[in-house]
Image 1 (cartoon, rainbow, N blue to C red):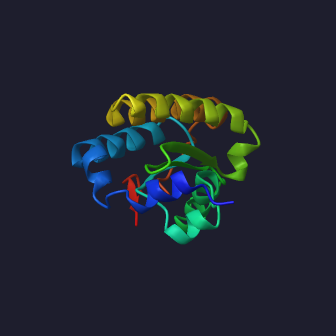
Image 2: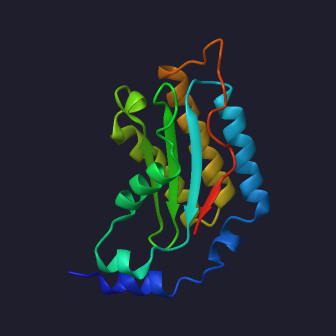
Length: 167
């Protein structure tokens, strides 16, 4: 059954809403934090923000988590030599954050640990602090990755550090 309230949230989400919550200053701060983070571990981070799902996806009952996995694939976060990609996915219409880790990392870090980070980010976002919530989440992910995936002598930057606005 279709969640009508959710359908309306996605249908009437202004297409420019992400620009208010994630202006260039916030996106730039995220990009710098990702770059700094990746010096401290062997993982690769991607940060993606999506305003709302297509109404057909909402009608079909596609969850924010399912969409995060699809975006993980579309952005080729899985395409790292050590299977060490991590996606931070923000779906504004659902007010949800999901963290998807590639199989190399998922062997060491349980999804429950990623969910704790995502919940902390959502809490800051509910307060309206998108920069702090994002930076705090990246820092917590950095600690987890540094614990399980310390940087090697060769630590190439395999994925772009620039946040993606999914359209």
